Each structure stands twice: as C-alpha cells, then as structure tokens.
Image (cartoon, rainbow, N blue to C red):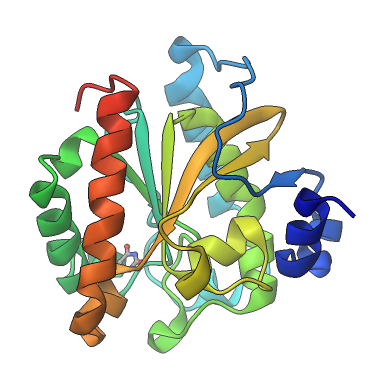
Length: 234
Ligand code: URA
C-alpha cells in the first residue's frame, strides 16, 4: 500500500466518498493546477442560478425554520474563498454570512494578516440557519455539499480556507479530525479542477476556546505566506 493510499484509507469517510463523484488527494505538495477556468463573464449568472437552485430546495428543515437564504459576501472575483459552517441569528436576519460575533473576530483575523474581508469571497456549508444554531446534520452537510462544490467551481479560488469541522467534513468527509488536519495545505479536486485548501479553526470556536488562537495564528501566517508566494494581490 502506498503512503498516499494509506493516508486516504485512514482519513476519508467512505460514506461521503461514495456519495460524491470526486477524487480527494491529501498532500502537502500542490499538484499541477488543472486548467478549467470558468468564464468570468458567466460568473454572475452562474452564481444567480446556484442561488436560485438553493432557494428551490425541498423538504429542508433548515430552510423551513429560517427566515433568509444566506448565500455569500465579498468579491466574487477574489482569489481567496472562505467557507464557514452556517448562518447564525444575525446572519439569518441580515441575509449575509459572518456578520455576528464570529464575523467580527473573522474580520480581525483577516486584518491581522493585512487582508480585508471585502476583497475575499465568503460563504457557508449550509445556506439557511440551523434551528437553535445546532450543527448541521451529516445528511444536511452532504446535501448542501453539492451546492458548495458548485459554488467553489464558479468562484474558482486560488486558495480555499475551510473554517471549522463542518466545512472540513463537507469536502473531506467525517473521518478526520480538525486538530490533526488544520494548518496543512491540501489539494481537493472538484469537477476536474484542483484547489489548494487549508482547514483552520472557526472563529466561533476560537471565541469559546481562546487558548486555541495560537494555532489559528500559525495557520493565518501560513495563508499570508502562500498568498505572497502565489503573487495574489489582496
Ligand atoms: N458562523 C458561520 O459559520 N457562518 C456564519 O455566517 C456566521 C457564523
């Protein structure tokens, strides 16, 4: 068994893998980027279509118990895309991701590495607020991951930041632990295109566990380093 196969056996949720039609590659070294660029002029239309598709979701507990679809915030042409978990109360009221306490911390985290959220694209795994802010159920994560993967393909970021275990689970399955996987560059292939991604702690978790901020800071500095290496102007 090769090291690559062993890693995959160790950490991939077969359940999720079987439900997706994509390959996962866990590796610190970036692959050659596959070229499959979405046409910029279509982006707005594609995003609008995706939003409509999500708004037409049927028999969804999340949609049925929330007031607004929370789709995204920021610059759709950004090279950096952040994925959180799902809207909270404030986000549900305003129809925008990360506008409550976790959002305030997220803004500070980005500012600390000389980034401004308006230059970044931000979305969530689920687009409707889970009742009582519960964590989305595995079945909901799987259902919405189809939308999320489409969303990522449309935005086509150079760097994908997955904040928290729900975002991690949505794309990498539920057999891995965020404490072990955070801070490591991983390639994920969606629709024949490879995306460089990093899992890191969610700001809401950092508000509950401030002693973990030191790890988050390591990840943020690594992200800044990669942004500079790739010549991303942000
Ligand atoms: N937490 C998230 O994961 N997303 C939000 O939009 C707000 C809080």
